[in-house]
Amino acid sequence: MRHLIDIMDLSVEEIDELINIANDIISSPQKYREVCKYKKLATLFFEPSTRTRLSFEAAMLDLGGNVLGFADASSSSSKKGESVSDTIRVVSSYTDIIAMRHPKEGAPMIASMKSSVPIINAGDGGHNHPTQTLTDLMTIKREFGRLDNLTVGFCGDLKFGRTVHSLISAMSRYENITFVLISPEELKLPSYIKRDILMKNNIKYIQTTNLPEVMPDLDILYMTRVQKERFFNEDDYIRLKDSYILTEEKLANAKSTMRILHPLPRVNEISVEVDNDPRACYFEQVKNGKFIRMALIIKLLEVKI
Amino acid sequence: MNIDSIKNGIVIDHIIAGKSMELYNLLNLEALDCPIAIIKNVTSSKMGKKDIIKIDADIDIDLDVLGYIDPGATVNIIKDSKLVEKKHLALPERLTNVIFCKNPRCITSTEQEINNIFKLTDRENRIYRCVYCESKAKQS
Image (cartoon, rainbow over all chains, first blue to last red; front, side, top):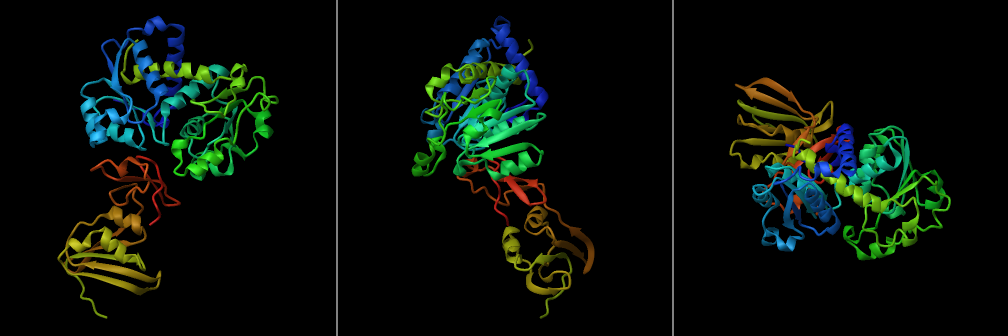
C-alpha cells in the first residue's frame, strides 16, 4: 500500500506515469467513468479548503466512485479532542482511500502510520501539498512538452509558500533547470532549501527583489499569494501583502511563450486584466488538478484499466 | 581525589567537559540506585579537560542519546574489574524521544502519545530534522 505525503515520495518515472494517465483521462474520459465504482474516498478537511476538497471530490465522482467526509474541523470529532491517529483508524475502516488536510505539519504522516488505506496529503499547514505540485508539474509538461531545460521564476512569498518549496524540490530532479527567486527580503526562500536542495544538487539560481528586470529570462512565472494564515503578526502581513502585483504592463517584456502559473486562490497579486493574456495558465492549472488527482487515486487504489 | 574502580559496570569516558550532567539527565541515571560517579574537569592529554561517568552496575544505556550529545565519548564495559569492550560512538541516524520538536505548528505539539522522531539529514553539520514537520532540531 502506498501513500502520498510528500512529492518526493514519487520518483520522476512515477510522476511521468501519473501525468500520462491524466492526459489519457483528458483524451478518453469515457474509459475511466466507472473504474472506481463502489469505491469510497473520504475527504477529511480539518482546515477548510474549498477548491482542493472539491477537486478531490470531483475527481472521485468522475471515476464513478463515492465521496464522504467533512469540510472543517468544527464538524469533526477532533473538536471533541480526538487524536488524528484515532480519527484515521476509524475512518479507514469505512473507506478505500483518504485525502486529508490538516493545519498541523506532519499530521498526514501520522495518519499514514495508522491507516489501513492509502492517505493522500491534501496540505499540512505550511509544509507539504504534493497534489498541488503534481498539478503544477502536469501543467508545465502540457504547456512545454517537457520538465527539463526551463527557467522557472517564483514570485511573492517564497518563505512560507509550501507550493514553492515543493515545486523547487520536485523540479530539482530534472536537467538544466534555472530558478529565479523573486521576493521581498523578508519573504526570501529559506536558507536550508537553498543549501539542501539547490546548492547540494548544483542547481543554478538567482535571487532578486526586482521582477521586471528578470521577466525577459523566464519560461515560467509562478506567482504566489502572501498568505495571512502563515503570519503570527498581522502587521507584517499588511506590510508585505502587496509586494508584487502582476499587471499587463509588467508583462510587456516577457517572452510570448512564457506561462504564468498560480496555485490559487489569488487575492490581488495578479491583476484580472492578465486573465485574458494567452500566457495566463492558472485556470488551466485548476482543470489539470482534477485530472492528476484522478490519476493519483487510480494509482493508489491499484485500479487496473 | 579517590574514586573506587568498578567491578561490573560502565565507564563513559572522553565526555566533553561540562556535558556530563546533561548526559546524566538524558540517560535517566537518576533512576538507578547503584553507585554512580560523575567526575568533571579531569585533565586529559587529548582533550585538555574531560568529564567521566562511572556506573557501578551492568546496565544497558541508550547509545543513541550518548552519540547525539557527545559522539566523541567512549563507552568502556567493565566485567570482573577488567575492560572487556570499548565502544566508539557515532551520530545516530534516528533519535526517538531524545529531543522534542519545538515547532508550534508541528503535529507533535498536539497529538498525544506519539514518538518524537528526528532523523540525521546532514552528518557533517550535525543537523537533525523532525520526521513529521522537517523542522531543524536545536543543536545540543
